Image (spheres, helix red, strand yellow):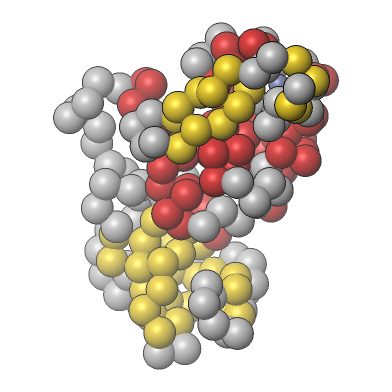
Length: 179
Ligand SMILES: [Zn+2]
């Protein structure tokens, strides 16, 4: 018997494929239904506090999507703020959210900063928290200005910009547009 990747319930599990990617995660019936869109908010979902820190991409994606669906609840919104997913995994997680709410081909990609202000290519933004730069020992400090950003096409959550001479991907939720 194995435990559900999200809530750790020992039961028979369903292998759920997290479209549009091919990440697979073993879930109990309740969690599988929630990932498919049938989610009832409640304390049971505090299990995501642990699940989101899993090292398995499938578990991260499933947990992130549920947190997104629950973000009206303060704890879920806080957790989403705290979590830093690998940009590629985050892209897959978000792709599924878009697929669920809008028909393919009609998704308009809007990049918005942490305050919901729309970003455009060439804008200057300021980091609102210290961000480790993946694959390096560099930490991009909170307050760092990033000039001449580029919007990542097809991913509303990401921009690119130069920090300490390095071109990096930055999540929109961690920046603020400068005047
Ligand atoms: Zn479960």
